[in-house]
Amino acid sequence: MALRCWRWWPWSSWTRTWLPPSRSTQNFGQHFSTQEQAPQICVVGSGPAGFYTAQHLLKHHSRAHVDIYEKQLVPFGLVRFGVAPDHPEVKSYGAEDHQALDIPGEELPGVFSARAFVGWYNGLPENRELAPDLSCDTAVILGQGNVALDVARILLTPPEHLEKTDITEAALGALRQSRVKTVWIVGRRGPLQVAFTIKELREMIQLPGTRPMLDPADFLGLQDRIKEAARPRRRLMELLLRTATEKPGVEEAARRASASRAWGLRFFRSPQQVLPSPDGQRAAGIRLAVTRLEGIGEATRAVPTGDVEDLPCGLILSSIGYKSRPIDPSVPFDPKLGVIPNMEGRVVDVPGLYCSGWVRRGPTGVITTTMTDSFLTGQILLQDLKAGLLPSGPRPGSAAIRALLDSRGVWCVSFSDWEKLDAEEVSRGQASGKPREKLLDPQEMLRLLGH
Image 1 (cartoon, rainbow, N blue to C red):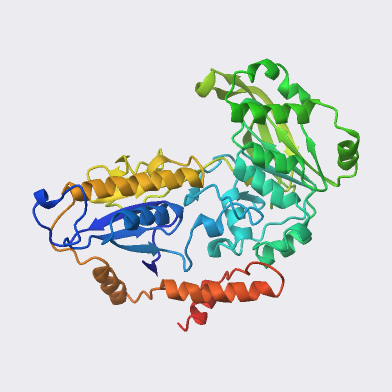
Image 2: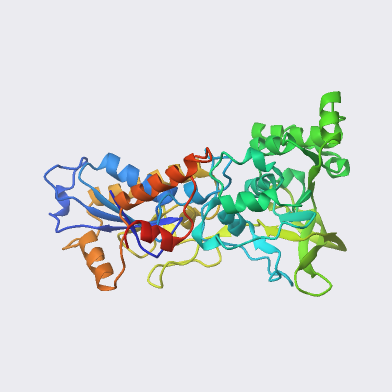
């Protein structure tokens, strides 16, 4: 499998199949024949969606030739640039862009998307110069999903606990100088609607040197309502309820009393305006609309009550959702949903074009969801191949792509080139006991490869 760097579409993947001249459709049987010419398949995006799709295709078609194209100079998408360096086993989002707040003042210095902040501490080249100012006392994270908790945890974790992870040295240096002592994690709805999972919540509750701040009033009447919830949601709510309402034991009380940092969940609050500093040069707070819930079940929504609350802070991180971007005018795209219109991964009205990952289903699920989704896309593609439904005729495949790139002066980074960069990162990390020290500058990467 070849990996080539092409400045195009990352993260969520779409798949184009090129077929060489084929025999008649009746020759497609239940099993692929070794006599048939190899289908040439192009996967754009080397994140989990791309690799899982390629894995399924190669596993179930012994003659398939798969080329993966990636805009970054290094592969693996969110597995490399994902959520948190202290969670190397779990990466839980993958989209090219974030949802804007669409409120006055969000352009002020001190306001960032959680996606960019995550990219900064994980070494995404495009975010390496983000330089967030951590000299403030209070940070606010808008959104109550796992990404929000990951960001809060990184802000509050003692830096010495991050030294042996693959966090970038620049981010670690900034966190060592950080003055952030309080992090508020804000949601439009209530405790029953939080999107994080129990593992991430438990880590926050037990985070060294911190104490949780939860208002017991937010949990009134929830005890009976959670009894009929599904087990994962019930366990999550029970942990939240205990943390908010029960008196901690002696040991836990002592730990909380000695904590120098704190984090809290603010419910029923919706961002209305970023408040500027007196000189108007940066963010100094956020105005939150107080909300109430209307509807039941999945239809529950937050509506403003008319009351507002001003929350002073110097750092605001938006973690309210992610979205994919359109790849090209020739590829259908639904800008409202942020997906390529498709039926089981088949792109609508474009035979031979498939999609996988968040660009297929929208920004939901974790990496295991993407794996299942990608395997299904691969399965659908192979079914169409067997049925003779894919475009036939001469298809030059990757040779034509390489010729096109060469004609445009685009230098391709191969998988063997990545292995050289990988070895360099691992070598640099060994000196400080880290798994690797990520290369951040694309120009430095190219120089190391002799370009």
